[in-house]
Image 1 (tube, each protein chain N blue to C red):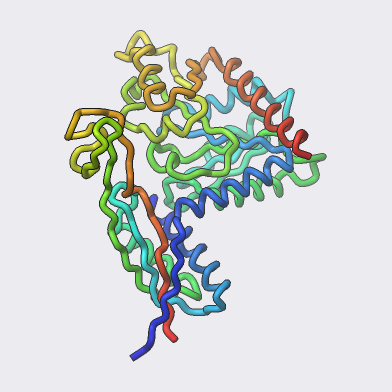
Image 2 (image 1 turned 30 degrees about the vertical axis):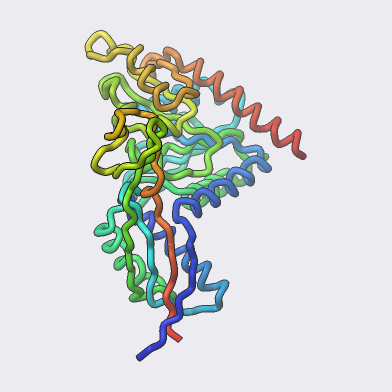
Length: 234
Length: 115
């Protein structure tokens, strides 16, 4: 009979991803890249919101977008039409991105960007459309944003508490259809703050662009703070 | 598939440990998986069997899973209760001031290597 040797590991799978994510954040800080992780359920308007946000910011900073999808490159094409750097990440059936996959995506983005004068200022990761799994895995992003659209209902913060508790900003999209839905904005904000008192809530309409400037202003402030933090450490 | 990503992550970790210990073949891996870790053992095993055969070190390696029960602690009455049965609200005193004590972990406990 074969003798079996046991090696104790006791390493948390989630903690291991968190270590990789922290490492990635440190590297991003040195390079001066601000990485935003954008999450939501499918059909909430992630890509449309991104297009609007790019319109608002593309003259003041250099943007690169990583589109994560199980398949297809529909979103990457839409973003590329905005004249910004864009790559498609295929997750091969997986429901979320982890820090290692995000790092690989950033490397692809850098390759795509080669020949340019420097790295992008803002990298945006459009995560897989899903309110459960992406919230479980730290991607290494500097900040997390999620989009909740009006037709999804104001009870979603109660049903998907983790997603709302990991987000710095919640965008409430499609406010132009509020009159047609039984969506109570105040109750929704209360539900979000019940799970995450620090979350900043910004109502927007990506279709018309309403409210997007507020989000762009928040992003600009956060990007500046991120770069200044590195300078003060250097 | 949530579990596939977790399996890839476990494989990366085990490969690192194997390298540190100068091992070129791992026969088995033992995990501790919490009841509310969002990891479903049945799916994990499927993904495991598919993924390890595509590696050198872990080809054919067995996966052993020990389940960790989820336990919630109540700040209101200082008692604990089973999370899966009662959820967020304490069955002893009705308080919502409760937090998970254990059961959300997914830990690589040990690896087995034949001598």
